[in-house]
Amino acid sequence: NLISLHPNAVTGIAAHQAHTSLLVLTDPHSGDHFLQHPFPEAAQSILRIHAANGQLVQERLLPASGGMPVPIAAGLLPGVYVVSVEHAGQRLAGRLVSATW
Image 1 (cartoon, one colour):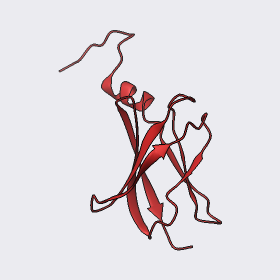
Image 2: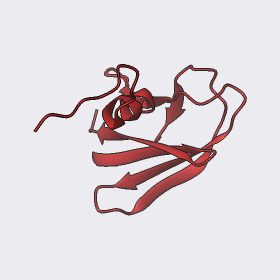
Image 3: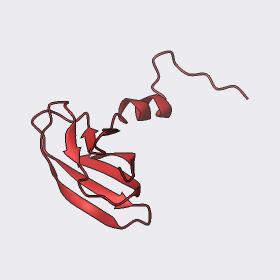
């Protein structure tokens, strides 16, 4: 079985990759967590952090960042968390690992 695509066709994988630029960063010296997202500079977004068991740990408005990392997740207990940012119906998610420093 062979599938032939038009040379300019956008595949589901390519479209998915174009919208998954949520970046969760951790400062190795302080343990502070930062988030960088691709939404417009003037846009406010909703940040949600869920624990591995699905419990909502944090929900707040995320200020416009202009593409710069913004601090998130102060005071998280050690563990794995799902971080999501929502803006205008678009939702991006990433993983955050918090450890004792």
